[in-house]
Length: 463
Image (cartoon, rainbow, N blue to C red; front, top):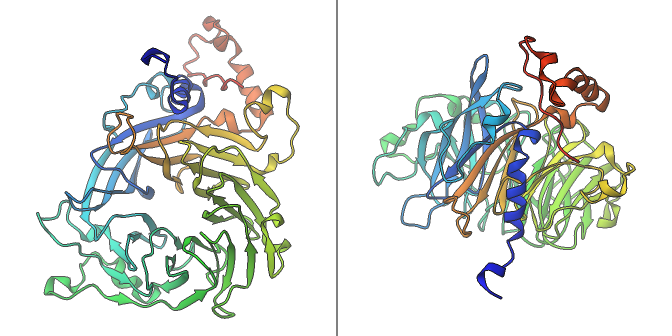
């Protein structure tokens, strides 16, 4: 077979087709090349400014280096365009190899080891917790640190969370109310800390006493939970109760914990998946619903009310099947009940609608996936390692891919900020009524809308 006969990679075909659909799929889209180093995590921070057509919002990322430069925690400022402001013809015009003018570095903070996960503390807007390839977790008030550290400066966290006996790399959870931090690691343990006693000192913009050659304070966990038989990959705190947690791991199990009853699990789902379980999330609207994602490429939905003390993965109320590679992250929407999203090594972020389980489909509709698959973001050209719903802006997401090992021409990684076209998720009757108002413009009869002064919405995406 000659060079001209080599088939085009599936991800290239997927990306090329996706790019032509940007004006139909998105209300707003922004692409930012991360160079020279990729980030393994991405999080929205607090909204800093609000204007008529755009908002200014913090982003938290990392620089995962090869050792020739320090690993860092990145604090960025992003301009987030408001809904129905961006012109369709503009959002599709970007260069994959360029950095976006709408995303700028604010602070570069040296970090002890690579940053695998970041979680923001809800009640302390400028405080984040980080996971690295070490037993310790680190707490940072990013406003205390300079924009650029001095050359050769040592990492200077504001607090260190200790208690793990082996490396704890990825499992990191934060309570929605209060200041609880949960973590899991290779020691098969799930630990829970409370930052409540340090809330005032951590929130203060005055640096801790490390300038006097004193190290950052260390905090022991309040609770230690034992029950996993292999590495804990993810942990989440019940958004309705800081006493309850769930965790998943390489032992393929989903375990539930309650700090009021002791250190043993209160519920077990054995063999929740057929392979390592990478991630989980607890619904912010229905406290009995938990979703998990696995290396077996599938997501599973569990109803805690239907679980006995020890059950198997067959107890799942639904299995989501569409991804073509291991799942990396799963997260419920903070704004829309029954909506969740998942990222995968297949370079996609899928958005699912639980209200569509079992809905009838035509033969043509089945070609594009199950009825609950409502949207697919295919803008990355390599594995999506993390994503995050914007808590301040409904239907707006942040996603990041690691391009460092792929010949994508995108540098270390690709960061994308995007908002779904509202014609996709709004009620069908409402969408059809709006499109009817702009029928003449959509069909090419612009004279009918001349002088109206209003910009019609884009047409709906093709089926």
